[in-house]
Amino acid sequence: LRKKNPSVCIVALINVFSSEIQASIRQSGAQESLVRGAPPDLIGQTLQSVTAIEGSTLCSIIGVGGIKEGVGATLLTGILGDFLGRRLPGNVLLIDLDFRRADLAFSLGQPAKKHVQELVAREDFLHFENLQSFLIKTPRGFSLLASAQEPGLKILSDIAFVGLLTVLGNFFEVILIDLPQYPFQGLGEVIDICDKVIVHVGETPNQMKTLWWLSTYEWKKLPENYTNKLLF
Image (tube, rainbow, N blue to C red; front, side, top):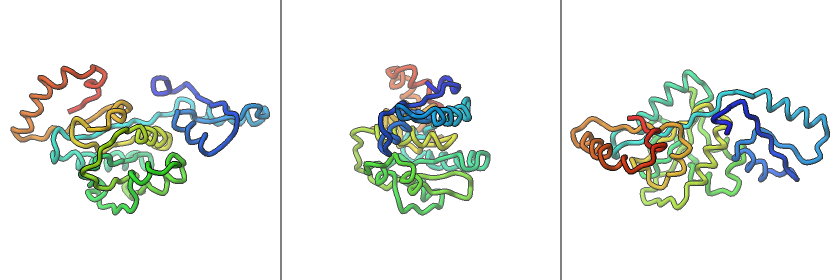
């Protein structure tokens, strides 16, 4: 709703305050919360806080993947992150969801001691204090959330990553996701919340042949709202 109309403000009305409820509220897209029966002065402060960000720019989520493995999608993610980070310092996040290769942090020369898989395995992974401890801030103006290499990882549900991206969208203007090769196995819900998905097609004859086959046969079967997101 707020993506279509940023002037819409959402305040959650809750029965009792707790950190778990606050995490759920942030995940749902509400900017603030009020406990039922709150005094008028607190209601006024909350509404002031919400209207202060009315119409502010909402986060753009952009996926970057390759038509095949090894075409340079991770490099492209890094180049875009560096470019945007210098223009929007502190407001750009790069997140690695290509668990097979998991080389975004390495490509950027940023050693990572914590990984996104560890983060989403925690029950309280949506709490901002925990999120902050997993983010790497770089001198180039962007932050990074790395992943660990797990070639055999099978994602049964990516709803945790969707929740994570939704919450992180409250703190960044642009999120760039380094995706695995098309068809982005196991990350269907993540693709759904992306505004655009950049597909790096490469330049060899074999890669061009793959692009021709996908555009002629495969993509004709996909919903229009999915194919409209794709940029080549």
